[in-house]
Image (tube, rainbow over all chains, first blue to last red; front, top):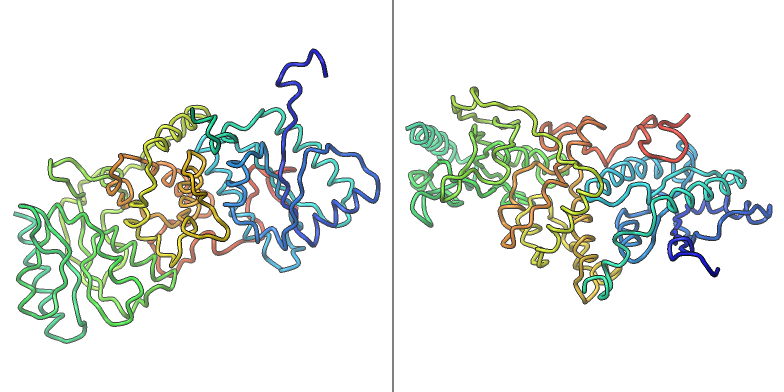
Length: 150
Length: 285
């Protein structure tokens, strides 16, 4: 790694909220199919994308995540029938909120991955990681620590 | 004086209402506190009615007093109060039949220096959306009701502005206490599990609080300006709520407190909602 600048060495930390029924299984399939994808994501399994409180996403950003990815079942395929449809409205509004607060909405990525889409899961992770890398280190990640305030 | 005339109209309506025993109490304003000011007042007998007063400093929202009430009450409602009541009805906090609404037109309230109160200059709703009895103010017809310009100044300017406002915040929660919509029994920020607010208050916690509150008010804010008016540190994050509210109006066609039959935007869904900013396309399927 010698000769690289701080920014070139930097790898984004991405928190991925995956729904138990589709996307988590999709991630599992990507793993068992031995598909390669960037190791920047930390997966958190949730029962449904409708279970994701927007505060989870905000807090993840505040506590040091450079990006957050949320993935659930495709519309119409939700295990709980309409959880992802409620979530969709919430996420669209959250993106607008982030934009207004000056946090890059590109940091937060939403998508749908079904249990059979292992290949798509790997592609999505690649795309998300690239997008977050383009945006750069989080502007609020250190808001919570004393060093940043001084 | 137009306010005296309106006061007399309001008094006669209230007197009739209390004499008919339809309501137990009327929530309204009376002159008091400081010279020229109006403060909330509960009229219980027909004699009390003479104390009721309407003026240009009735800025305190009185609709939150009826939140969760189960007896029949009368309430004097300026447009933002009427919107709050409508919102309480859509959120099933009160029943429509339990409130007798005396709607009053409003040309905007002023503070002690005669300056307009926060929220009043941009107000687009000058007539109460629901009422049982209507007190008219002729001046509202000549008001210019053009929508305020967007305050989105680009990512970096937005962050700079947000950061500057946040630095002033001392987390006293006055905005939350003043807000009509913050009626959760336990606010998320007061919870221990999960602990959204660590013991040490830093910029991140303050941002979490204000963003979380905005998210809870998304599409529900009636833009009464109580949060901005109540802030002792001069924090104005109402512009964020305003932007989000406007976005929801454009995207989902829901304006808070305008129609008691409509369901709040984030409590319903449509299969073909647009997926703005989602990975892989604008819309699904």
